[in-house]
Length: 334
Image (tube, rainbow, N blue to C red; front, side, top):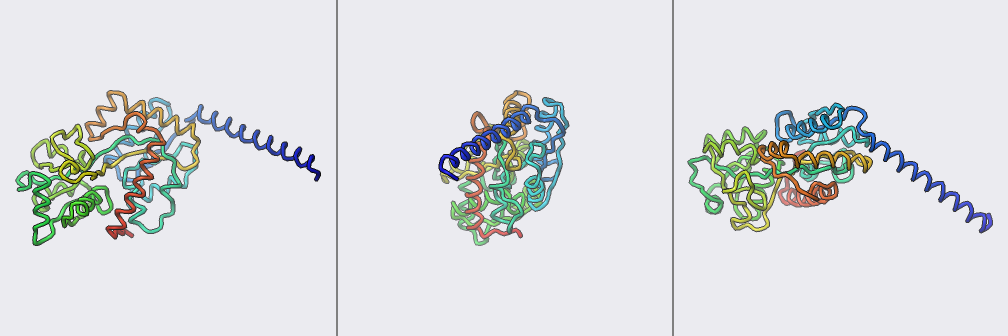
């Protein structure tokens, strides 16, 4: 082939490739404009009735009312969420199968053996709805009235104090381990099957300390059955304005908020992700849904925090951060 002929062939190939790319972009744009044309499934990685499930159902109702298509919530609990995540990782990347997760999604790679999906590669982020911090709670008659009291007892105790968590490998478990490592105070977890059972034993005095979600503890704090020592968020939260954070009680930099977000299989058209994100970002800013979620204990994301890009940065950060923490803990749940 002569040099001139080769240049002509290359130009034709480039033009064909460009035309094909334009056709693909046009088809994807048309699909995004028409989306959705059939039912959507939101897979929840936990059992019905929990905070993540209730959030998914609220979002599903908004999507269904706005778009006029059924939005079904499918609960796939098991293996700390890995079963549901695996199902969505293998689904078609067309926006009709989405995944509702919380921070446990970023903890799992560090505590389970090889997964049949990659949390970092097999999903596209859609929106982070908000955060629910954990709270350190004690029985109402506890001698501990602040974090300093607890840590002083822990450091001087002849036996290691126990704390009740919502389960091994949960954000509440990690919150306790982060406190143990950063405060250099011996603490030992008792893992429960959910925040409810953990709270029951703290109220009865079976365990002196609980680390649970703020949303689960709020009614018991309001009734005076429990007392809060600290929240695990960077700053105080609106729902518990009188409860100081761990960070402001002598442990700067301490922070663990449990985020709750929506993911899609990797490769989902950007236009569809933008469509879902735009609808939900607008919905959670509306007074009715906003107030309801805040009453459930959520600190809602704002502005750019709601963008897919911001959620991706958060997910990447926590995959690395939780991987480091669980490695230091030597935590394995295989």
